[in-house]
Length: 304
Image 1: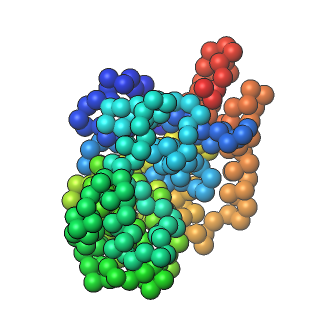
Image 2 (image 1 turned 120 degrees about the vertical axis):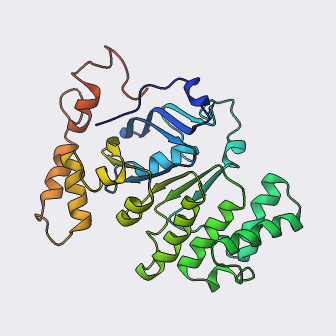
């Protein structure tokens, strides 16, 4: 496995890095969902995060803009530690576009209205300027003639494209996508992925949690495979998807890419093995990263 070196705040001030995640942990009660994630996203880079359900992908994405508060570690955005209690997270979020699995559009507003609201309330733009920007971004996602339509009058794919236009209307430095096609009928997926591909071609920095392997392989600059709250493997799409080095990655991709030729029950057995803890509470997936029992230092809380 390859993992970035430990990062200091000074390292994050490089113009190349938009986001740096350093030793990120997240627990819900007694369940540790993220177990020391280290990664960086370079300006103009498209990073796709893949992995089974429950692997921590969406939690990682939500920690990047603090929709979930990390238990430990830090997230740096443009060189600033946004996990610092004194940092103005609303200012950072105004430069982070987020597209959810569900569209989260206001049903009483038109497509234009949905794209204008945050511009006026957060960025302080005039109604006329917000309308101009919203219309431009609706055209950008192929919905220039549907500005007066309410969400109920749009298909799921069109609603998701409005959600993308809404995020773009804030002029974000980074776009975060949390499985943006998972709630869509298969025939509607293509238009959304086409818009995302266009954004990548334009140089937009993007972090995408997805199950769309073809999109990840064709569009991503780097693919990260997560399982059990850790990064198992990362690298160029041709390597991670086309010729993975880790057995767990190969097993996952076989099930995703060839779902009719699997050993029934094998995934349940592998899941139980991956999440089985030893006497020190360390899972097999962590052993290679953590090292021998006590490798964190005697008396050290593994979540901190």
